[in-house]
Amino acid sequence: QVQLVESGGGLVPPGGSVRLSCAASGSIFSINAMAWYRQAPGNERELVAAITRGGNTDYASSVKGRFTISRDNAKNTLYLQMNSLKPGDTAVYYCKAEVVNTGRAIFVSWGQGTQVTVSS
Image 1 (tube, one colour):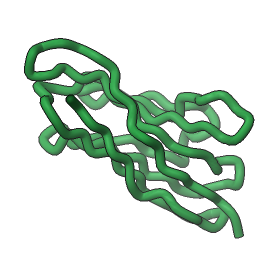
Image 2 (cartoon, one colour):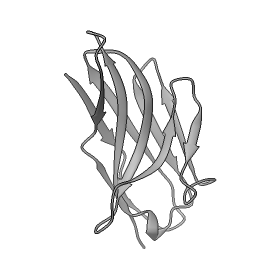
Image 3 (cartoon, one colour):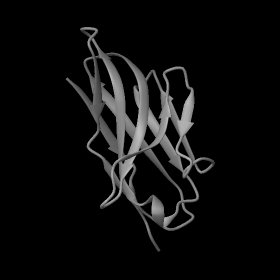
Image 4 (cartoon, rainbow, N blue to C red):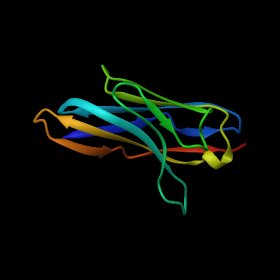
């Protein structure tokens, strides 16, 4: 069993910043790619940013230059630093990880989500 737990969401004023964390725990051998997704009411879930185990990153055009994805492989933790937030960034943010468990099976795991609301 592997669990992903996000934290760090909340109410943020426009122009503000927030840092999300996603901690993976359980029967983990290693974690390959990790990513942040978001879903706003009435919208489909969309990719925000992704990072390989080696640190290569990719961003949605809407967040490029404002958000930074990073990870700590020793702690099995993923981060998303969100700056210059806009009301359009309001959504539930989910982390996703491709996990190799101790039995060497590979599967995709999702967190439960954390709400980020950008409003004055």
